[in-house]
Length: 455
Image (cartoon, rainbow, N blue to C red):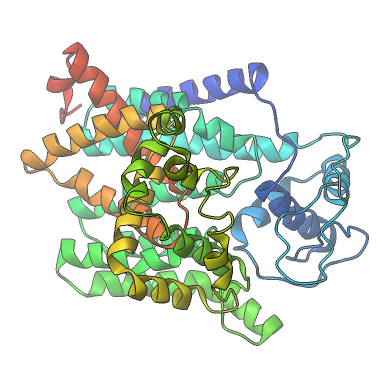
């Protein structure tokens, strides 16, 4: 019976996504971050080289390692000749925002609109990842609660966030991060019920694949291993996990060593830039700090803050304002930070200088990043917290454990970056469960009795 219900769920997801593809899909031509990934995809398909051409599409680029390889490598398998011509035109005619080294060609000054858009095969791959993400949302919710309401409605509310479909229409690594992260949470939940070496190995591989998609997941590996040790109290399980994790990364690290004679995941100044921006935010005053919580509340928070507070206070968070933290005269302190230093040193210096301010700003940025889907995320967060309280108060800690990983990443990103909500896309599964519980509680439906029922 369970297999039939899961089959019906999968069929329903495919039907909904086909309908959305036909009625609402509007693939976005690469811009900003997407242009960078389009560059990798084009060069992988055309020259079999992982590197950036910065608009020079006639010759193969030098091998690079400025980003993690997994997402563009997978997407490049679906490039057709027509798609490749579209990518080449886009790369040759779109200005770049990601040049980090002096003398790098960043393309033309103006965007040309003469490129024929033909990204459907790539977007179709994204939609396949989207279908997998929705299915995993239902599976995770059912594994946690045993409730068929959660099995069916968690994917529905994840879809209704419209974040997954928004990511799916763009070349963004979030499309791959979300199903990998949900899979890791499923493995962790299964390990709680029955520890095993296979589950430890799978968790290590999935954490490695996440790191090969976004490098910052490297720092989550010790947290995952710590969870496996705490849950089993046996060192063999985290040891196997870390071995599997290291083996997953080894081919990419060896490739980088052979090209650059360095054992490294990525080579980029981007981390320095992000760390510098993060430390600059510590310039906000203690008067501005509470206002940041209002300003970063989704949809209307910035308007409310501007209405309630003078420009010198609310303008700190508005990049277009003369009072912005990143505008003159505040920019003098921002520019005084040496961007050639390592990101960790930049962050360490900022923390040592003002530890209390850094912690306070980290809380503010965690608030900013948690609202995936804007107001949808705010409602989902309320429901998630209510569900978390219900579960833990009844001695069921599965939801708490699968929350450790996304909440760690939320806190870490808030401490080291500007932490925009898209960075925390793996929160969507938890927030969708929150929607199911919140609406069920409001309607006094059978959801209260359907939790943790057997088939």
